[in-house]
Length: 288
Image 1 (tube, rainbow, N blue to C red):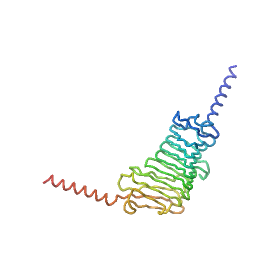
Image 2: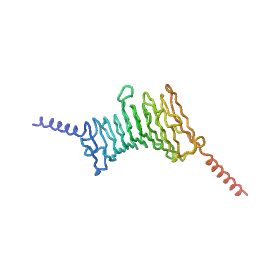
Image 3: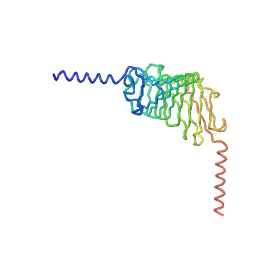
Image 4: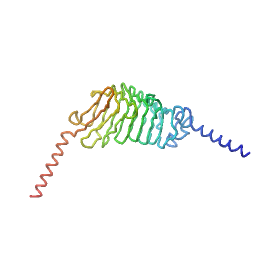
């Protein structure tokens, strides 16, 4: 009997383990545990693993502890939100129909799944928003921004490494914190940024530093970058006075970058000059 019980127990354990992960599953939500991604009871068919995990009931889901299992795909849709502050790997990430993914920390990894890194990877559609404000994130496969989609970089504390990224009419949104803003870097394999049709919005109102240059895009191979007319720069004063823009577009075979140079406005210099003059007068009075 003993030789029979052990395999049966092991088999039962394997069945229970297999039932915890699902081929495809949809979020049903459970506010009692804080809407945690890693709770099996919050999914209609068990935890995400093989197949696509869909969050589409308008809920806000938190992935705040490391998720060890590689997921075939995550779709966030229908006004739902996924907040990620821990480590997770998914072969596909689709954000659509006013869905939002906030990467605030940890490491989101989209692994290499094709020989030339040209497989489907990150797709943002129809009002979807990806907002990156912290953490270290890698997108090994092709990323596509479609009409009405937003790729937002908030603040200066993220590392964002891309492979291929393309858009005909999506929007890149850069929001400065007091120290600046992070770079979207293409340095993985055949890094091609085909973003000539993209709109680029910059909000520099939160910046409190001195004159500095900030690289918004750095494609280590080549691509097609937007023209200056595609940019909207706010919160940094007037062009040529508060800021300038350097756009490199080789069209192939060389590094393409977009660099925003922040210049203190004349009023800033005048204020500094006034303070220096006042200090000089006060010093002379003390000596007298």
